Length: 188
Image 1: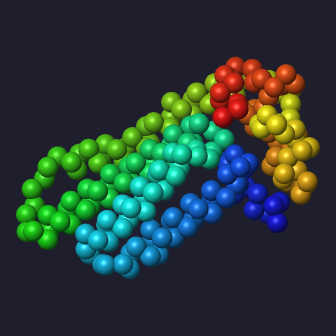
Image 2 (image 1 turned 120 degrees about the horizontal axis):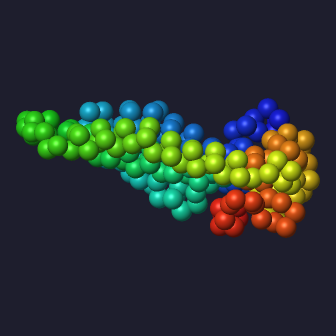
Image 3 (image 1 turned 90 degrees about the vertical axis):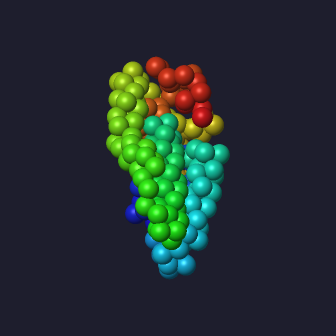
């Protein structure tokens, strides 16, 4: 089973293997449940805001991805979703009151949505630079306490966690350090 669905969990730290399931549950709640709760009302948008803010707080507490740039992209996406929903709540309330004044918040929300496309670029460039700084002969594990053969998934024959399949960004040498990376990035 891990060989067939292991790709779903590859980008997460081992201890947060379940985060993809939580993310799918959040998406189901947002698209499958909230849509039918209190249609066209402020309560519907407020429920979506609550789900998004809870997901954001939990995400920021655990930061489950192995890549700092993916963590950054996810946090920006959740903040942008919350801001967009808040703006939607304001529009819903304005519509109910019969007013239609534009407060300029629409430009802020539009800028936040565009930032999602702009911010990952420098972060991804930094990741690529860090990957170039690492050596391909680096060993075993992205996880300081586990070698590739001790990985929980390695015993199930997953090609995603063992040996040379470790991404260069996460690889550490025999001394436990990663060339070109600070210890906080490797052990985080």
